[in-house]
Length: 323
Image (tube, rainbow, N blue to C red; front, side, top):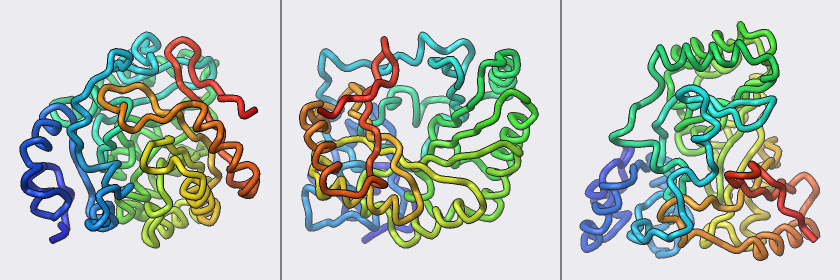
């Protein structure tokens, strides 16, 4: 039986038929360490007859997540050393990442911030921490762009989001606000007129970057939610993560990129998986990623070509060459 509410406990997932009862104990062990949430929209997509379903693989806990590798790290891209004040990452000269919240509508089993978000962590920045972050941005005129992330900033209420957007709107040298989110796909009903007004309340140029990894995530409801954003005057880009068993075949990856373009969303980044704890079972090689990108270039429209990138603590985001 599928659920009409977000599944947050392994017992809920078993009851909804997303995992057999005999797996309950092992799922609970994973949930004790990492946050769990599957929205009704994503639970409905899972094919219960397919043990390798790519939607389930992204969201249903797996005991392989407790198999830690020596080259994995809690902060795999090195954000901590570039955090001048709480909630703010300043890795690149002209832009900062503002981590407004530490919660998401869904929790990806491969998340690179999985040690920092979810149950037991603060829900988001305190008023004082937010004030400190905005003060830092205000006093650094080289900052041209602010990227709102977390967690997922679109889990905020429209009222709260509007407050943050308007405060950012008062900072003259900030010209671009970019919101990274999964919400339009995983909880499309949240994209309401009130949320759209909040997105535009800063008076700045806004972009929404959607994270999705399989074409099935772009359901009719998700496509309609994205259309509402775009029709409101907010352009959309897309980012995906290359994941073994989810999108590591050219036809699957190409179908995802075509789905984005059909939604008027430009594919932006294809991320090579970060080495977060317990994610080795999702990892592909860079060589395989390069082969996929070569095939994508020869078989799919130029509109469907993301940049294939890897994020490293020392160098930041680096484009992977496609020979």
